[in-house]
Structures are given as structure tokens and as C-alpha cells.
Image (cartoon, rainbow, N blue to C red; front, side, top):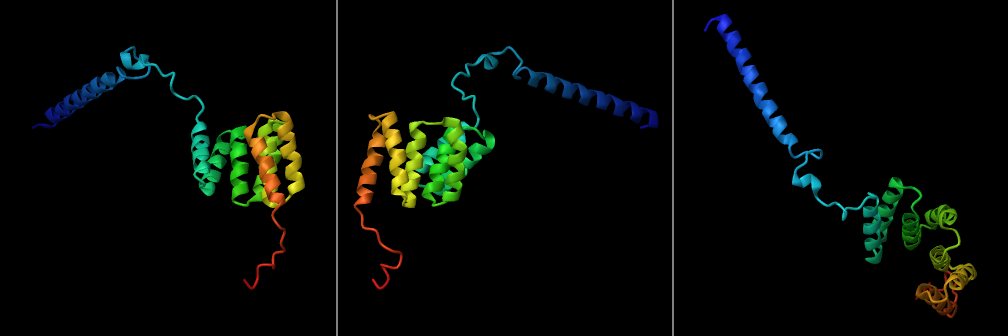
Length: 180
């Protein structure tokens, strides 16, 4: 082949490849979100709008399964997405309580109180946190507030019963069990 013929052949091959590329590009546009085929008209009402629900839902499941460390991580991730979510703060605080990370739980309760105010969920959770720490008087105050808000709430009634049972256990110093 001569030099002129090879250049012409190269140009024709380039044009052919370009036209093939354009055909593929245009055919893929038929299924885009802006096309008017049946796929773009599908009902999406069952899709969740709020993307941070996934960590909260998984965190609640993990908490119920007593995987408190993993639940703590999921609730922390939910707070990274939306820092003012009361469900994420409640889950984070409860998980921190169960891990005996009371410093993190206190931080969460301080953040949570201005968001949800004087609600039964706050008083039940914070009272339980105080009960875990051994502050029975503080726990009683919060459990009674929760009970006053809604006397028919089973969690408030159960927490008062739990507190009543906790008072009847004997108090021991840390060294009392040595030698057993």
C-alpha cells in the first residue's frame, strides 16, 4: 500500500469505529432515566427516601440481638449521615450504656435532651442508664417522670418494677467477694 492509501484507509477505519461508537451510545440512551420507555415509568413509591434509615434499622436489629458493639457502630454511622436524628441518638446512647461506655452515653443524652425534650423515651432510657450505674435515686426520678407522662406505657411500668427489684438486692463493697 502506498502512503496516501494507508492514510485514507486509516481515516475510513476511524470513521467506521466512530459511527459504531455513536450507534452504541445512542442505543444505550433508550434505557436512561430520561427516556420514555416502560422502565422509566415504574412505580418507585416503595423506595425509601431517607438514606440513613438503613444503619438505624440494622442498629436496632443488632441491639435486639445483643450485639451492642456492632449496634453502637451502626448508630454512630447514622449520626454521621444526619446528626440531629433522635432515633440514632437514642440507639447510640442505649448501645453505649450496654457497653458500659457511660461517657459516650452521657454525651448522647446531652445532645438528645434538647432535640426531643420531655418525652417518655428520653426518661425511660436515661433512667435505665442511671440504674446501670447504680444511681437508684436518679433512675427513680426519671422512671417516675416517664410514668407520669404515660401511665399505660409498659416500659415505664417495667422499669419501675425493675427498680423495685434492684433495691432489694444487697449492696456489697468491691472486695467482699475475695476469697470465694
